[in-house]
Amino acid sequence: MNWIALILLICLIIFGVGFLIADLFRTNSELKAGAAQKGKTRIKIIGGCGKDGRREPVVEVDFEMGTIVSIVGPTGSGKTALINDIELYANGNTPTKRKVLINGVSPSDEFSGDPSHNPIALITQHTNFLSDLPVEKFLSMHAKIRQGDAGEPIVQDTLNFANQLTGESINPRVKMTELSGGQTRALLIADAVVIGNSSILLLDEIENAGINRTKALDMLKNYEKIFIFVTHDPRIALLSDFRIVMKNGAMREIIKTDEQEREVFEEIRKIDDLILDFRQKIREGERIAKYELDERIDALKVG
Image 1 (cartoon, one colour):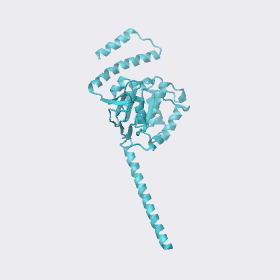
Image 2: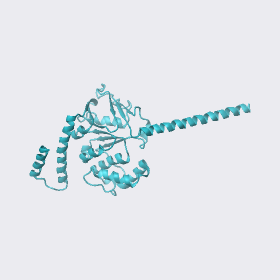
Image 3: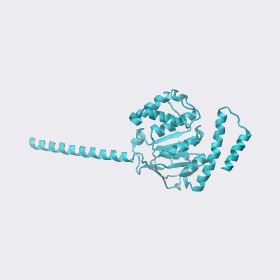
Image 4: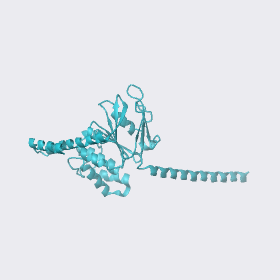
């Protein structure tokens, strides 16, 4: 009997080791598959219901890397609820009953529970820093966690990015809690794009956050990410590949930006740049003469 027990024990050990090796190979394969998907994130939103409890007219929406999307609609139409569903990886468990799929599947708890695996960054006009670390130290710590040995160059890249979005340059030795509203939002965006390397950026009404929209739009387009804007700004909306129209808490319509709207965008851009130039003059304590405005408007007509 002892020999039989010994043989059974050896068999169990062999089978156990076999299963362990198979599990290791499977885990390694899953890791490789996950690595292959990194940087190729796709989102699908499966429609739920509006405030009246009825099914949304838009059944589903797909987002791929490089897509710029705007969520538009009047105040109270459900724009913020939609991006909250995306951030929370809704799975029929929010008031809207929507579902969010990442690369075709419902995200695991690891996505939301572990910041290093979460591909989503949400930035609003009210987002602030709680840490009182100096800017440079915070960025260095974050870079070490997210980028390993990238070190000083990536910190400087982040500051350069942020300083192009804000009217007043950020002093890297200043505590983050001492930054202005515009500087804070600029640094948040730069940190998410450069250091955090988030695949999906949710930006809620950044036109009211005191940053340079012209620079922000031009710079963000250079990154192969999914950008989802909640906005009332026609310039941001017309730059997008398409816009989701919200009403009464529901996704009512998807409008793809056509060539005519692209032309309108270019004209709005000229007007917006004029206003931004005059705003900067006022900030710097300069006067604005009527003839200067007339000349700029005439130049717009000629152009």
